[in-house]
Length: 178
Image (cartoon, rainbow, N blue to C red; front, side, top):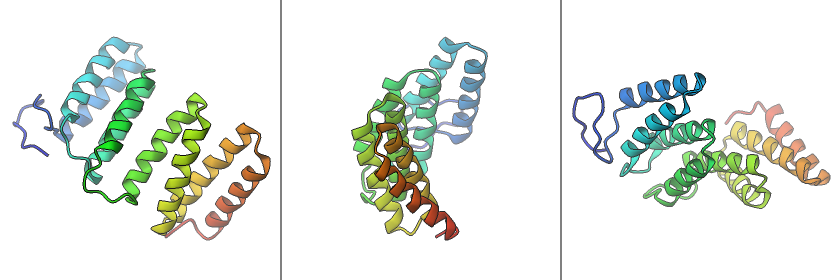
């Protein structure tokens, strides 16, 4: 991350101060709750600008996912998807089986779920399940399996839904822990 000036906002690409970002997210959420979407959108744009040039790593993935949530809350799904796609494309030195990236892919799949893009989200969910399983993260694996079961139900794939649900329940019965 770039060294930032000790001001409330440093507009240089790649410069993100977490205290500023937290305050900006809170302000945007307040504006959105008040129905002041133009102001919330302007704040989201400033946040997005501060993310340009940030390296994609475990520290920045959570921040980018929060911005995606803000875009989604503002009804800007195209921006939310573009942000996640850009993040996943620029993941840099992180290995393909990184759990933080799998969580980001689950977030993108959730966005697709709201749009009925079943084929695309199924592939992302299956990839994330494999990553979580490989890392022994039974809780995350079970959560994604449960979401996949709901998708299969929506698609009318009863047997696949039942199988995914049984797997999720079995993992949770094991304590859902690593």
